[in-house]
Image (tube, rainbow, N blue to C red):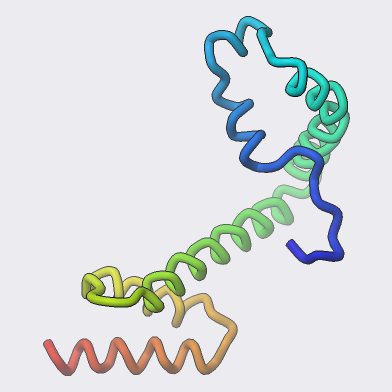
Length: 125
């Protein structure tokens, strides 16, 4: 997220925590700070959920593209993490990372480097 974009009131970490409540939380037993946060954040949470539902109902292709874009970014991040790992890298993981970079990266240099690594791996095998 860019620094100029508005940060959501409720972080992904808190949403994850609230999506997996403890028994006490399932019974409505929250500490004072969480109650205050929920009272303040509930409108934002509901608005975001309604927007996603409306998009899913009215523009399923746009929603699918947005989700696909997020998935591709995640794959690219994982691949970049693998190839920049110091030390020994599992050859299968390196090969898969290079394939992902070649398939999804918009950076021509990155794709060329991944192709070169795969060529060297094939030559060495």
